[in-house]
Length: 239
Image 1 (cartoon, rainbow, N blue to C red):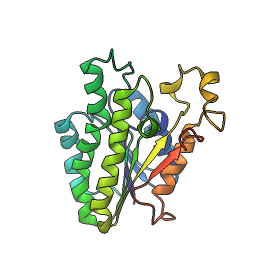
Image 2 (tube, rainbow, N blue to C red):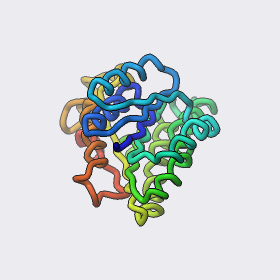
Image 3 (cartoon, helix red, strand yellow):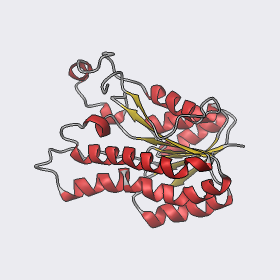
Image 4 (cartoon, one colour):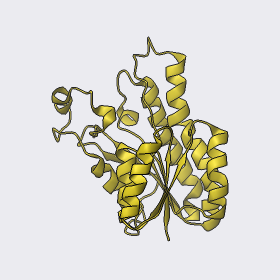
C-alpha cells in the first residue's frame, strides 16, 4: 500500500492534502506539533475513508526530535510521498522585527525542511522512487511587506527544492514546490478580504482544496515529468 508522510497535516492546507491523498489511495503518516486533538480528528476522517492514518507529534524545528520520530520508521518503510507543509508566521516590519521572530520562522519553515528531508531521503533513494512536494508561498516569489522572515523562509524552500531536484532526479524521485497565494484558512482569517481581493486577478481567495488538488496531481501516476518546478496556486496574484 502506498504511504504518504504529510508534515503539518492537522489543520488547513495540510489537512486538505492528507484527506485528498487518502481519497487517492494513500495510507497517511500525519505529523503535528501541538494540536493533537485536531490531528486525531483528521485521523478519524481518514480512517472513515478506509485508509490507515498514523499520527506523530514533534517539532520540526528540533533536529533530534524529528530524527528520532522519523528515521527508524522510514528506514523500515520509505514513504512513497513526502509533503512538507509545516509553517508559522511571526509578522512584523523588519525595522521592528525581533531576533526571536526571525529565528522562529526560519527554524520551522526552512530548517524544518532540512530536518525532515534528512530523515527520509536516504530510504527513498534506496527505493529509487518517490515524490516530495514542498508547500512554499507566493510570498517567497514576490515578497510581502511585514513578512521579511516568512518571505525569506519560503523563498529558501524554492531554492532548496530546485537544488535537491538536480541531486535526486536520476533516482526517480520527483521534487516540486506548490506556492499558494491567499487561501482561506485560520492564517488568513484576519486579512481585510475586500481590500486584498482587489489585487488578485480572479478577485477571490482560494480554498484549501485548490492546493490539495494540485499536490494530489503532482503525487499521482498521471504526472511523470514535472520536476524541480514551482506551481503557483494564487488566482494570478503572482504572474
